[in-house]
Amino acid sequence: MPPAGMTDSYSVPGLPKTGAETLIAAAPAPDSGSIRRRRLPFGWEEARPVLLAALSIIAFVVVWYFLTENRVIAYVRFTNVPSPVAVLRRLELAAQSPQFLHHVFISYRRIFLGFLIAASIAIPMGLLMGRFRLLRELVFPVSEILRPIPAIAWVPMSIMLWPSNEESIVFITFLGSFFPILLNTLHGMAAVETTLIRAARSLGASEGTLFRELYFPSCLPQIFTGLTVGMGVAWVSLIAAEMISGQFGIGYFTWEAYSLVQYDDIVLGMIAIGILGLISSAGIRLLGRLCMPWIR
Amino acid sequence: MLNLAKAQTAEEKAAVAKAGRQVRSDRGHILVDKVSIGFEKRGRRTPVVTETSIEIAPGQFVSILGPSGCGKSTLLNSVAGYIPPASGRITVDGKAVTGPGSDRGMVFQQYSLFPWKTVRENVAFGPRMLGRADAGVVADSFIEMVGLSKFAKRYPKELSGGMQQRVGIARALANYPSVLLMDEPFGALDSQTRHMMQESLLQIWAEFRTTVLFVTHDIEEAVFLGDRVLIMSASPGHIIADIEVDLPRPRAAALTDDCRFLQLRRRCHEHIRAESLKAFEQQNRL
Picture 1 (cartoon, each protein chain N blue to C red):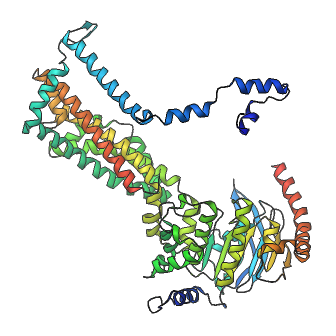
Picture 2: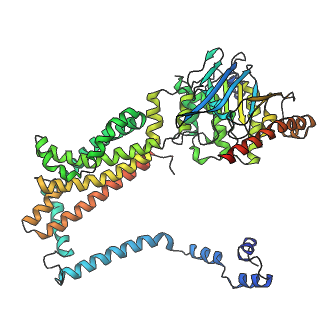
Picture 3: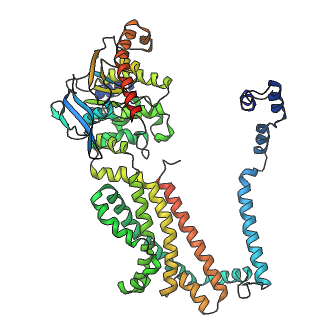
């Protein structure tokens, strides 16, 4: 006998009863099958994503190896592209070279400064703009004009504005992350529950308390969306700025490698940028989970 | 007020906590004097409540009953201080209502707990805002009163709807308000939980004896809980009947079979039926 619940889903009104029963008998029992699969000893469901990820990365490296070792030319030219073996050898050297690590450190410092300044201005500003209409109507038009300008387009202006190269690159990084954080904070403020504001005020909360204990935590999910997006844009802006006007930094390293015909270093720089970006966004995700324990 | 440090045994502690929770019975006099409330909509003022007057004695439990959309919640929100009346005057203990205040505790229909605060932090919020150093102790006492001590460290999301509303009641009472305003607090609960909550609210109220203004559209609930049932007309709302509920307390579930209860229910029903029909027609016309 099938479970009681199944009879309903399979019986069709108007169909003779025997027909419905045949349908039930013909249908495979989906439940027992899935239960057996879940009980496999090596936990296929948990291992699957890890195995597939490994497979996909290995496949990528193999294709890369094949294309570069054979110097394939199929409209796209792989003649000068370094093979994974060469890059790996270069990585070993670079990991011990203080110069390479210095580039990484400089880039991280710029990201950290620019991003931190952006967050510490954009978040309070977003909260205040969300709360006070006058401020919002006053600031929003300017922000809408400046927002579509990519941070890279600011490079010449930035060099004029700031006394040193270092400050101008931090400024570019700041600009890249500022607007995503501001806009998402504003979205967060628009979504604050009126009931919660009323509840807090009935319990005697002052305006300052509302900002600290209501608006801010209520906006945190959107703020973290903004921080994640902002971090991505900050890296894009930083690398571009370093390539154009830097003397240090991983973007400068990558561009310099091209100028000096150090093709292995180009790939090394690219991989380093990818990994650094990955670490940054993972850091923000982790921070988000720590800051919002009430969300799962 | 609370003197937990000196109390030795658990019984003494319970007694002290209970005494600490009591509210002075001369507080909580509500006066709503010829109040009209309206909303601006595309330049035109739509009246929601017209010329309504209510007087509620300290310690009374008053249900406001009316069809949906009749303005009963709006009236409650005005007493809470969220919506200023267009005309008329609202006073609580002789003081004019000009905005929300901790003398009037509010319990909402649902989702009004701060999701980022634990049960304990939610309940301690009010006392902390009033600058009480023992906010945590007060919170624990009220959480115990609603029977949720085991869940003090949980987040609201981890609780059932009924439990969340119990926290909501505890949070509102933790400020020792002279008036408790309840806006269809059990409206979103299933009927089993709802009956349990009604009884447990009466138990809490028996201990606390604060003035309660309870808005509902459920006739049985209004009669079961209240000393008085005020019935509001369809929009724009005003009071059309003031029915005394002289049923004995403490009240239990069995009371709903009592013939006096049934009589009162029928009286309310007759009033509300005509108004519900009117409200229904109004909504259809829109």
